[in-house]
Length: 286
Image 1 (tube, rainbow, N blue to C red):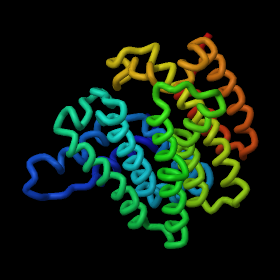
Image 2: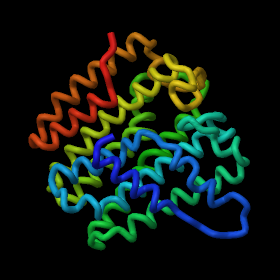
Image 3: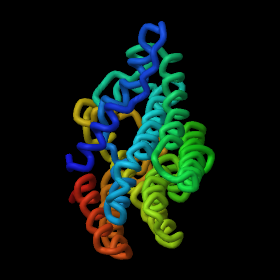
Image 4: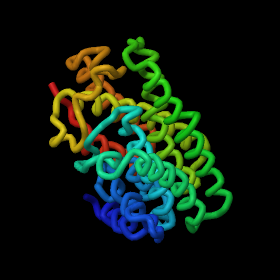
């Protein structure tokens, strides 16, 4: 882990919600899925943009990066519920509804969702910037992105979508939150609107790559290797189910090549960071 992400991880651990009550385990349940780990991919994207342009603002941005991670974790908790994927494993740990109960998992997800915006609201940034950040995350983490994508994913289970519908689903469910993470970094760094939008567009393609990679992992790794329940997408609209594993791998490789080429649109510092992230998380396969 880079020094940047090591420092952020320490910040995350020290700044998780800590709510005292006579509930026997709610406070522990709030933290369980966040401290279980994860790629921290979305916070990394946000912080990488800031590090490239305004490194002195990094610590001020930690609460925002934490907010993104909390919102992402809420989405995983709800995605694993019996009403959705009914998964037993996440981030190498039992899912919350298995460790505790379904009601607790729903409420922890709700709490992390709302607390994400609390952490942004108390960040040492200007009110103008924080309003813009809340606008982005609330829209693309909700009706304009992730929640819409999840609704389509659940409704069309066992119904085959075409490739454009499949991309629409996953651009909303997965890619828009990744795109928003890059754009929010650009907002904190006060980059111009054109660059913000370029980063958002880049992030949508990066998010598609992320989803294709996830679909490939689902059929090529067991649950222990992946740290989550795998071989659980047989009834879902995934890139592997629609295209086959070989074609999905081919598309993944083409997207890696395209994203590396597109990264040259940004100045050298940011381009190098984006390429480093792509190389770390996505490796071409034959």
